[in-house]
Length: 255
Image (tube, rainbow, N blue to C red; front, side, top):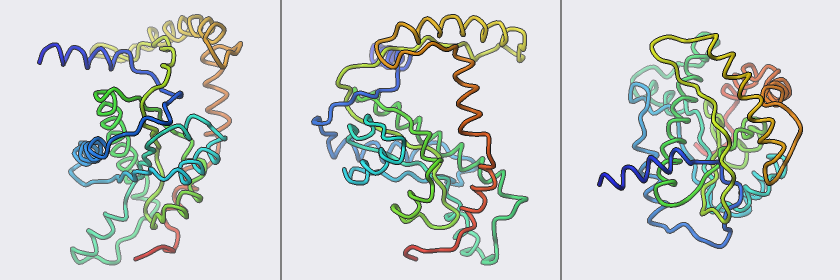
């Protein structure tokens, strides 16, 4: 048992986002069911079940997600794509069931409910990531699902009060990706701002060399510049307002 535990910890320490999956190696029905059970068993805030996972194995649907996500080929290689959604539709039904059918999302409660859904969804995603790792499989998060929510809402018949948070590809690695150098993100007892700045500066140097010398997708840029560009390009807009409107949209699917 101890060797198995040590082996799993080693896998976690060496975990990388796998973007080169074996398209032919099938995930067994037993493992898919195991993954579903793991996701349903993940921790949740106040046992409120603020997130839901949609398991997608239909190749046409997976191809659409890849196309919408900047034509990322590695998504099409996945045997399984899982969409994790913040699910306040369940909460709304709970209110209806308990005598408060008039309950609604509003600008006062939306922020906290969105956080609950996002945190619950992320915990489910990480539970699946670890389960896949234990079975010799790899995974890669798809944060881009938040940039095309309307398409996912229509295709997957997501009701009001449900919005995409993050996706995850799962499959058997064909050839493994390189392991990126890691940045320390842990402090003892108190936050250390000076240490943070020193570590970011040092990490810029390490990652610049990594970006220049890695096997594919080489680029001449520092890590901090890369992240600043990504955050400004993709997140510098009113996503909060857009998500609020999506949550409050009218029902179009099956009741």
